[in-house]
Image: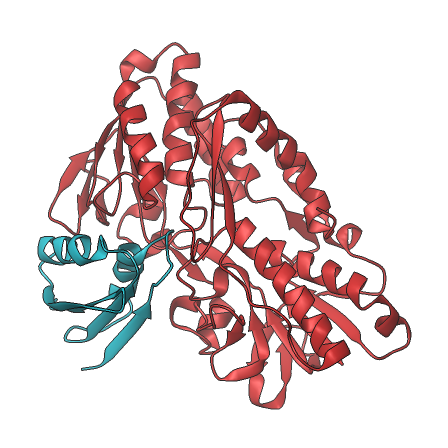
Length: 377
Length: 75
């Protein structure tokens, strides 16, 4: 059984290691072969980008060598896929090689797409890449006062990021002694300050307590960098001195180019995690079209389900369980306190008030993540 | 004119309305979108947004605890 994983990010790496442990015997005796293709020889811990933007992590802390994270027996190549030939059960890579498979897992992730909004890429700061996070760090250091506006596009990965960034900005400027010179204004696409109702119920009074103004039903439409105004689909507009965005995302270009899904979102069965119409094509992580959070924990829990299922297909000929929609997200509520939201398809989150302990656990998890990537935690 | 169905049952985050906002970018003017939601709130917050951005709310129906909200992209 040839298992091919496309994508060396969180989901693909966790799955590869999970399968390598479950199928160790089969891989040794040649009954199973596990290959992972990635666009990079490095693995990035993406949640670290938020801390990078505030100078609380340095770029080197975000990366490990991908090969160092993988179990023995996994064949790993830095050779991104260029063509998906699903009818032939093969892919062609940029180097020109062809990889055949019996089972393929597409875990290519997503990318910020600020260019989809006129003026956004040129005039807004964001922290979804190393380069942009470092640029934002410098811009924040130089900022001496004025109106900071947070605006976002849909969909985006890390749905907690809007709240995390506004609360961290509050503490950042407070620590610099200029919070009284900074007006923080938060905008959000739906009719409350966060899509999770219980999170919004906690966050709105917290914003009011901290002197953060907010405007809901604000879907970013365009940025007028000359006048320093942003306009919304709903007919609203607000001025800014510094614009911070959580941009709308797309799946990877290769997914769009190969016609696997509009905007790079692959139609995926919500429980089986199969691509619609294809029983031997699995999809996990950001690149699914599932109505769940595009978050690392989603990829993590999906990978655990798929690890169990693909191993069962090899050993028993059939998958054994469904993905239940489980997601777990930390929410940093400032520089030294945090809470979390845990939910699935049936059970909404019930977040508790933020505490220092949860914040310390998040900081600890920033280091423990590497054990997750190795399929151990 | 095509009709796109978004099954957002059990979607807490990003939630049915955010799914609709994202889907609006992927359909053509004149297309319809039917959102399935297990959240009663969708029967009010989706039409509220649709009216604000001047698309058309074609109707809402509840069947066996699932709200079916039908909208049309008008511009």
